[in-house]
Image 1 (spheres, rainbow, N blue to C red):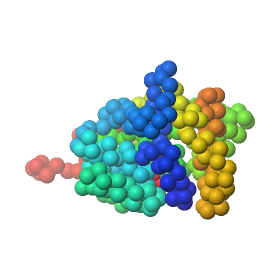
Image 2: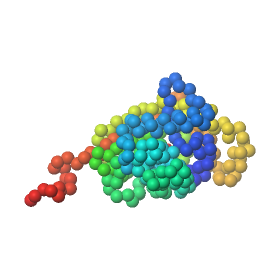
Image 3: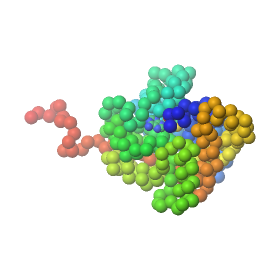
Length: 294
Ligand code: SAH
């Protein structure tokens, strides 16, 4: 997984820009394919998640799976948040720190190579735990929700956007398509949006809500937008890439048409989830109040 992001870093940045995630469009909107349109669509997804989850300006944010820092720079820049970004890829963390320096927000956005399930941050260190298209990479999702709860201050917000599968049993053809996507994208497995809600509640989150954004993001796999063709047409470029970096790198190119089919047939879905860490109620075992006289 870390290796996959190490070897595809420049490809993603070259093809997709600084945001390593889907774009977001209104119904009927057609994706523009130039760099500015691409950036606008992916940037919009960040703003939609901020709005859906209710991320407050100026909050302390842990960005789980920060990529090269595109979303974190929005949170740290215009929104004035203090962001700690973590990724499995040392090269991504280095590139993100460089981008934060260039953007003049290095004091508010810092990036580290760390595993989401073993961050070492103290309890209640953050107001927001933000996970934009990283949850599907984490095999132990129950552990992710437990760790997010631990890291949030009471009243803190969990904001997730993730690839998912439709609710219910998949038939054989659907399972086969999903397996191929997982293999090419080096992902362990998908859950449904309902399962994510259940996991959040089981971990102890309150006010859990989710929204299905499949229709809003599916355009991202339009071959022109995903820009896969640019490389597909250059077979020799792909041969060189595979020789240089190993065949894993090619998964990146195979996944595009499969994702498009997944969205077209409804087996691949995409959604956001927000949840709140409850404040300890009276008599629920909170720490003793210092001002209470015996
Ligand atoms: N959120 C970024 C990047 C998404 S790509 C963006 O929207 O632009 C997925 C990211 O998740 C990568 O940075 C990858 O390193 C990270 N990731 C996957 N599993 C992780 C884990 N267990 N701990 C920390 N980061 C992880």
